[in-house]
Image (cartoon, rainbow, N blue to C red; front, side, top):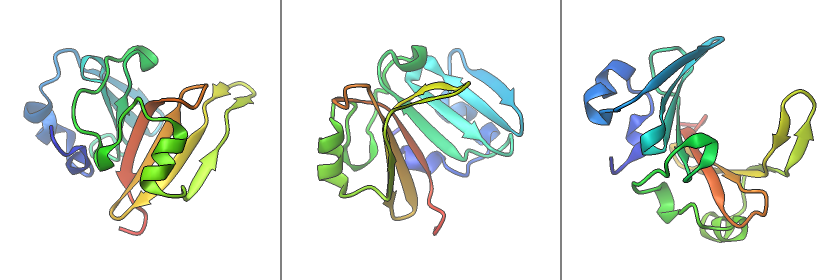
Length: 142
């Protein structure tokens, strides 16, 4: 799996052979579904229950996932600090600081970057010295 961006928009049935999950977990929550493949550090969001709308790449141990072992877009790595990610990608188009949200609990700091046809969302560890999850979506302008 060299280019995770190519998963966007794909029908989930078409990806079964390509992903070859050993223990996939499909969960339907409200109006969307999630396909989790914890042993590969990968989860997919299916906003219409059929097509991939977002690809989530997890760092080792994040939410019980193994670390995503393949290439991350733009030469990024989970071991990069927030400052290093911003050095590579420039100023984010949006960002947020860690916060305690009533009912939902603790929310990590994050940055969102427009990268042509895709958008990359980086969610940081509490100390901002590592990334715990990258989420890739199709850009709204694409």
